[in-house]
Image (cartoon, rainbow, N blue to C red):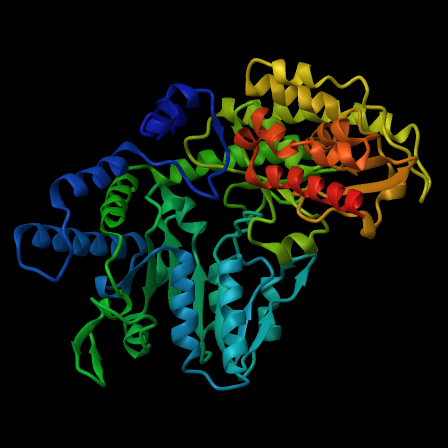
Length: 552
């Protein structure tokens, strides 16, 4: 069967909204869009079946209970679990990993070992760190090169005290898909529990936990076209039976007296409190939706886009490609050779292209790669060839513009300790305020950024402004009762905001600066409303530092 992404995309109402018809959505590793059946199922639950489960025999409660247990059976089939008793509903993969960390580690002895890898999401690092500190356990990492785990060397860190191995089934930062079958062979016959974080894997491949051979598997519905707030924990029934519950409360008990309690059977002893019932209904609809799709054709389409994107980006000299196309679930990760990754994200956003920038909750991996942040474009089956072509064209335009700016900045380098302010006299606040819409105002602010020249001499730790999303340096001196400033940053947005700030205060007296209501100006220009919170915080961080200089 030939897969048609345009036909598939018609199942997703978000793309039908007028403001989203041109949207190129490449942030699927963060969350996928939802098909109409999922949205309808959530709505229908609240309209027709809203009641709590298991606690009452009235008609609505029976209907809600039947729905939950039906979706549990669907989930078991989705993961090829042996029984619905092996499926625990959680809020997502993060909660499932915390449940496992708390329940499993409480049974370990001081000095026992947990093996994870440098490619893990923070959700598969931090809970194990917390348990290691609490129970005096030892964390060990799979050997790696520049942050990329060498899973064929897993045996080098396995020992007699290894009790838990918890590894990603697919990296959310790089898309790297380990050979789980090969890992299973290295773990076979050892006295340990093997956990697979399948948050990314379940979105792109059919999962068969029997074939993988893991003891536990976790995933989040919102990664595979389902609702947020619900995820799955699979565990072998005998292991779940032996594990103590993590949270206490309603639903997870059989009987409570004043000093002791008896817990419910599987899987309910791990489901304290009221579950997200509407989200479970939406999960059931997502599983039904996926069951009638050609998953192999969807994956083949995603891989075609992925391979082409890697070839195109590898040929762009202004980009540092971090990800590799081999064994990749659908992620392209890169960093601009010059300038700020965050600036590139804003450039793409202005062209209605949604990507993600940052460390992607994988800081050890990103640091090992030698960059501060990456741009991540992540694919889903509704992404079309037109989507990825528009993305590549926008990247080329950005690189051409930033290459010109870099040449201009390199023409007049400054020596350490030698700085002078920029001439901002040509900047007209009235012109910025007169722009008719936010897009035009943003472009004007980017033009203002060109007024801030490169100043290598001020890029010292003592001049770094804390609180900016991208690195920014601000220096100051007082001369003849007037306060003079100079700014530098790798980010065009920060330079533009800095130019706005300095155009109002550079060369002014302390009294004149203190009389200004600069936060009000920032808000009146619409910057507070349209810039991200981190960008707004960056402006306020620069303002605080400038006022601190003036106050002396």
